[in-house]
Length: 318
Image (cartoon, rainbow, N blue to C red; front, side, top):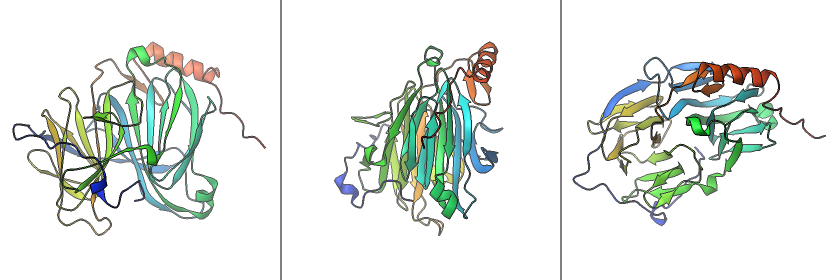
């Protein structure tokens, strides 16, 4: 897993442990992400929305892509398609994907990079494996998160943030047992590089066997823990959790995750996404690639896309 790492965690800044009076959040539920097909037919595990977890305000969707070892010619992606009303956050852990959009933005996202695209008023983009990955095959592993925009920001101009792996905010737990990669949000005196309209926290943590991750959490944020690889337990009741499962946490002052002392052979640590945010609490009308507040706005989005008002991806230069 070549997402950015550090050999000596003692060189990183740390955060203060929750005090004895701090209340850890309990796991309300643990949901196993069902498998579905996206794009040209690649499999994803959809942590939400699904039948057991239909909503996660302010988030709209969390897809876990891979890990998959593509044979030559097998790599797939998502050709040109539109979005309006939210933000897509694509975090690539292994492999690479090429992004292009109708604003002329884009680039190669690989090995720990994050692409943060604000669709806002409307954009057309593509997410395709680079030619070398299609030709030779190889490992691919990533996550896509959709973050809703409040009504006032749904018509914001589209923008693109290229967050390089080397630009993530790296922190370590007090005992050196956890590497915490902060992608977005304020975490004590530290801030992730992603600029957001909606107040959220989004991080990737690597937890050593038998180590305990304890992170303070804003009282007005909800919180979720999704397991990328490995096994462990979450919450005050130490509820078991494993790869492909997401824990929905209740109220409290901090999030607590412990890695099992013995991990599956495929991994040497517990890898989790820790995320949460301030709920928007507005009507959500979800229609494919469009997320608005009313049905009329969805109809308008479809008509604007069909009329070409969301633009087109510029043709590649010879």
